[in-house]
Amino acid sequence: MGEQFELNIQEGDVIVLGTDGLFDNLFPKQITSLLDTVLPSSSELDQHSMEKVASCIAHTAHKAAKGTKTKTPFALAAQEAGYEYLGGKMDDITVITSLVTATEK
Image (cartoon, rainbow, N blue to C red; front, side, top):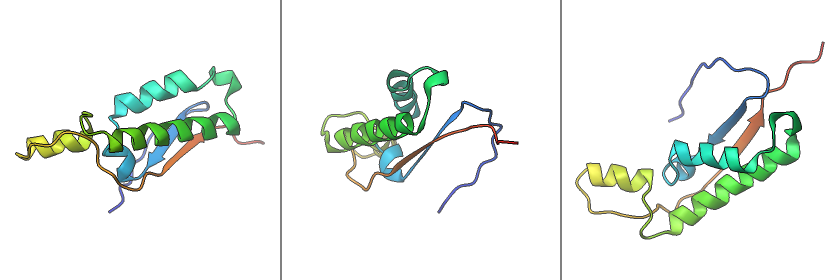
């Protein structure tokens, strides 16, 4: 089931949307770190940089999903539920990144 949020956003913000395959395999801090590493300065953000960071996030999540010793959100939830589990969870991974821009008047 989908979730709905209301957020205050401003020009230059980057929004990351993803399927459970993303969020089962990467922690939010890992995604933020990738944004900080891959994206250029805010004055240089464009469609190409959004595509590049989405691809990087998806690739990193896929790598984590294939890992057998990776600490992932899915593994942490499984352990909290009493299972001995370590590693990622193979699943479809979709990532959409959007750049908030001002409307033209």
